Length: 252
Image (cartoon, rainbow, N blue to C red; front, side, top):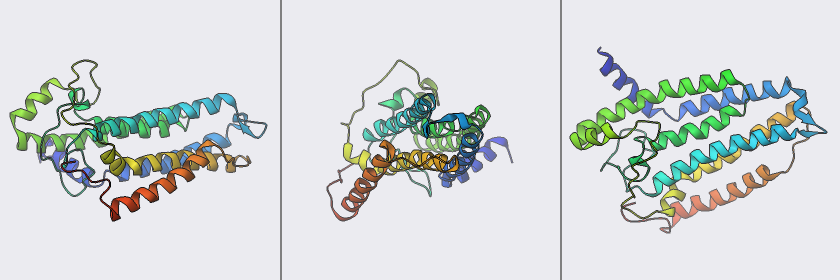
């Protein structure tokens, strides 16, 4: 089979199971984080994380949160049946070329990368972080290739002309085109509430696990309170989404 066809075949398969990679990274990351905490007792001072380590973990959370913000900003300006979480097959009723799509062809994947980079950084292991970057690149390279084959067949020169002048993954700093639609908080809430809950829970659980394996009493801190509050909010939003029309918007 030609390399082009093989790449597309792999990309289609990986697209269907693209939620698996984060879970693998998470499991490996937790294991590496535990190993780091156990082998660096100086990280704990007087029963709490050393200030410099705490600041570093805050930095990791900021990186991940920026990734979520990129996703939210992207999703908030898109119409229905584009930039979705579809799994079975590619869906694109129209081509997004404004907003962040005017700076980079795959802003959602840029957001995903930053979200998981922050978690990988928590391990404080350079080799793990580099391995994550390489794995993400190989994994999403094939998904992007398959998506671009689909979009080329559907939109033809409209897509290729836009793709020729828009970077694939590293955003350019100029040429921003304002979105045609207004920002939709309702769509962001519907589409990204899972990501926000998962992000907060992951950081909190890793903090708890790290404390337990090093003999530190887990604290009821900001992450614990934020996790509990976000879980309650998530359940309320879940109920609203499935039992009311408050979050529904025509065309979004």
